[in-house]
Image (cartoon, rainbow, N blue to C red; front, side, top):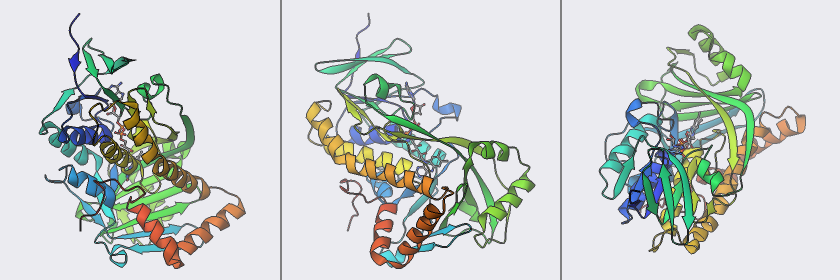
Length: 399
Ligand SMILES: Cc1cc2nc3c(=O)[nH]c(=O)nc-3n(C[C@H](O)[C@H](O)[C@H](O)COP(=O)(O)OP(=O)(O)OC[C@H]3O[C@@H](n4cnc5c(N)ncnc54)[C@H](O)[C@@H]3O)c2cc1C
């Protein structure tokens, strides 16, 4: 039998989270292997599609420190956030300059960010790529993990990272307890030309069937994230462009005079995955493989990137990155942020679509309170920018 290739860390999944982690670990001197199932050139890599990602300020700091923002990348800054409710009171307008920053974050298309991550990863010494290749099985012993790939190749490492997305087979095989909830909602994404043209404002509108977000795009276009019951989104995928525009106009109610030239539509069923303790023996889960959240308020990748930065901090002095003490340190440092982000997105997803009067009233009062109480607004802004305690070394603002 062939000898196993030796690495310090094997990362299963080269999506947004896995690729970011590989860059960070290799930059700290670890020898890293990334296994990715889908051929990058096939252009249907699930992490690298047409989604418009809100990459918040803390995440921009992390990506900047990893060198990912050094190359060309189309970034549309968000300087204002408007939150409204259809058919109810409550309206919040947040402005970056009033909170002492130039932007809350940037909108970046996932495909562009993914390609930039790949370029950075490939120019970083110490990363071996196995792609297209699938992790099939692994076995843990006293001082390492033996990984078997679909091709028969064997790898040996000190630590195995599950960055293999919501359905992670590694998380399950490593015995990490998790729960999965189906929201029975889907997100439909497309972009559109608004009148007036988009600027630097992101809109989030809560409607009784689900939220609707508008995100600034290049050339004055807007990225739309349309969330509704799954059956309704399935039907909406078949609407003619004219019908889509008419329905969008009715649902938006944001002061746009009109919309035109909608782009290609894509649909995503929405699930909540929660893993309270995302570590096992010589194994750790990050990103969607650990916690997958509802896209309301654009937290998913930002949370995954904070996992990446938190793991880099936890392993800063590790000679053996799979040793239990380092993994326990990671789990402990990330527990609060992961629990709070899951709770926050889940509460938003459920509250505004709850038909009962007390819930609707509570939601309106909550928004109204954020509009008038500076303390609440500061907290909202800090978490919208991704600064949840403990703030990792890479996420910190440089003076
Ligand atoms: C409509 C929508 C809008 C969103 N908007 C935002 C936003 O504005 N801001 C934000 O922060 N987040 C947003 N998100 C969330 C964000 O897209 C995800 O959090 C992020 O893409 C997850 O990345 P990941 O790398 O953790 O997982 P994934 O993207 O699922 O990547 C997992 C990778 O692992 C690979 N893989 C799986 N199994 C194996 C195996 N056995 N061997 C090898 N490889 C394997 C897969 O091929 C894949 O490439 C949004 C999500 C949706 C659905």
